[in-house]
Image (cartoon, rainbow, N blue to C red; front, side):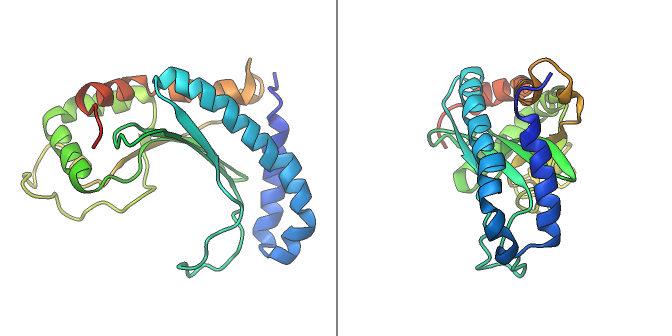
Length: 223
């Protein structure tokens, strides 16, 4: 059963497939109204709906952001001006470094969700590594329960385990990370499921509860 967002995904797939082959503002500008009405505005509504659900589930306010189609090419070798995908982020309101964000991605080649803390720096990163050192087994178990896998998105991990931790630490790979990001494909079952896309994405967020609870219990407070 469709929840009204099937058309957003299908229109987006068709639009972004063409955009990938014609990534210029000359191609996009005459089609901008189609993008805004059929993809951007439904995506903003989708983001607002789930922000309410995510805030309730997480027990903290979650702020939605639909990423712009225009790329920032100032510091990039790739000068193509437009993003041929739809990306949405729900981030926690406030300064708690250990309150995870949730992510949605849609393109012709990808329909997926992500979850985690993309970048930790300074005292927050030091604290997270200490958490891994003591609670690493529980972290691995909580990650397994989410049904997601570790993502390569974000900052590249260190080549070596940081001091003062043993290079042969049982959680060496986690200690080398500068954040923690998980991801999972969404599949296509949502098209026929009760509640459609909203319910499918909400269920993925609900499935992160073991990891969210562990963060709240062991890494609560601002950092």
